[in-house]
Length: 76
Image (cartoon, rainbow, N blue to C red; front, side, top):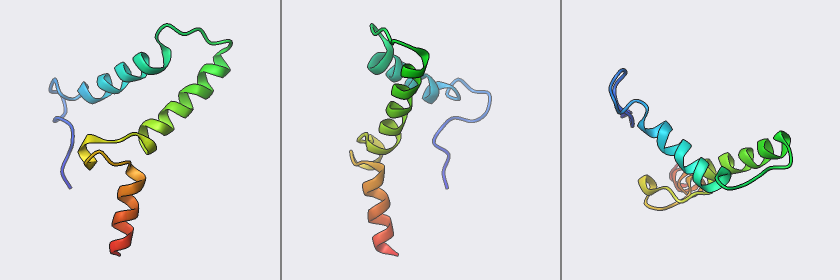
């Protein structure tokens, strides 16, 4: 196993979180008004699922995580 973020206490520690937060704000929140906090929470949950499960990841060869899991499981 290899760590994908910096070591504790260095400037890279927070870079991944800041990148995700920036994408979240730009893609979902910026310049939008939500009718309620509940509506924002629902849309945020959907965005997080998309980010984690359906988005094409550069580190996975521009594949979705689900595709990679299927590939790995087929090897077992």
